[in-house]
Amino acid sequence: MNFRRLHYYHLQIQTNSRNDFFIRDSSDFAVLINKYLVYTAPFFKTLCYNFSPQRYESIVFVKDTRKIVHQNLNPELALTDILSNCIRRFHIAYCRYFNFRYNRKGSLFREKPKAAELKSFAEVINHLRRVHQLTRKQVYDTYLEDRDCSSYSSYVENKDDPALWKERVMEYFGSVEEFIEFHRDYR
Image 1 (cartoon, one colour):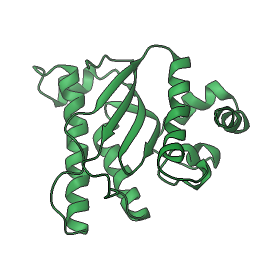
Image 2 (cartoon, rainbow, N blue to C red):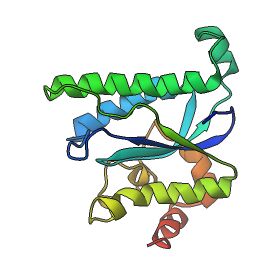
Image 3 (spheres, rainbow, N blue to C red):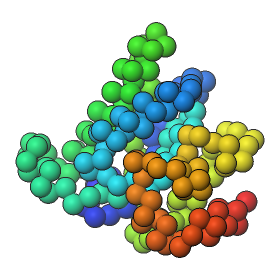
């Protein structure tokens, strides 16, 4: 997958283990989001995320990174290499934390993320709903509101979430009620 500036992507990252959830409590989730912000915020705006035991998914917008790339990184690298490297560095940072905390060894995530370009904002919105529904449908028998590892609750409860570009999504829906109804229509 080749990333392009000012385009939307659906990222899917598989974990290495089907049994070992890489978020065991709320402090793990706080560290995960913090590290996600540190490593991805210069390059991506995140519209939604969902962390489940087997994988995590997010919808991101690639920022106009020309200034950042030219000032801070090797200009010889292609944008795709730079963005893949930022995701890899995020994975390594969180893995170090997790392995130290739980006295474990090895990687938590598979090497390369899958990324699908979303060509229209309507496609972005449909993938957003799919990402929010993912955990409830495939892993847990609970409602969306019960999932703390998804951006859904940040939208519904109007929580401050520095990892999210909520303005863009809410601009489309207009209200939280319409956002909730859009997700319920999918059930």
